[in-house]
Amino acid sequence: MESRVTTKKIIEKAHFISSTIPDELFPLDVYQLTTEIGAEELYEWGKSKIDELQDIVINLPSGLFYKNLQYFIRTIEIDSSQYNDRQLLTLKFIFVGKFKISELEQIGVKFRNQVEMNFNVFSFQKIIRVEKVWDLVITIIPLQFIESSNINKISDELLDMVINRSMLALPRAFFTYQHFNNPNKLLDYKV
Image (tube, one colour):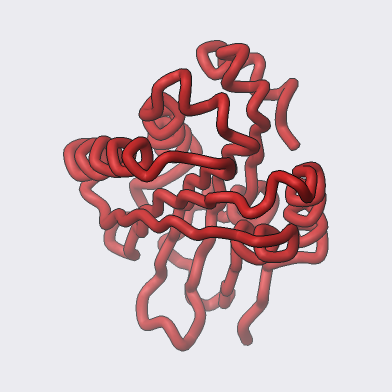
């Protein structure tokens, strides 16, 4: 039997994050850097590897890029449903703000090169223009499809992250004050 782990709590969190952005700032750009990890690699992935990839992503843009940022959001999604013949873990690193296409292209190239060189996983990028709060809510919600009989290759640590910590959101202040250089400051900013 399939369990949907996308909870009301995570939907409310996505709505809260989106609603903190004033209406007059819309439309906004949502820039997604996505990696997909297949069943063959899942046993190698846990919190430390996800954190390592997240640190790389956070350090890709220049400092000026973060002045136009509203939020940086990391989501973890998993599909181990009976309709998917293999398990698939998806990590999305999402920048929400108003950006120049040239900046995003540079970040995307750096991201692809780093992911291919260091992680050996599939990656892609996507730019979405959201017109209102609900568009953003729908875009950032991590979707979970877990079937208990199909999660044999997922570590307990990773499963805990998927179920309990599938979304991390950091506001612009975290970056403009360069707190990303101090991991202890992360707790002060989690939304």
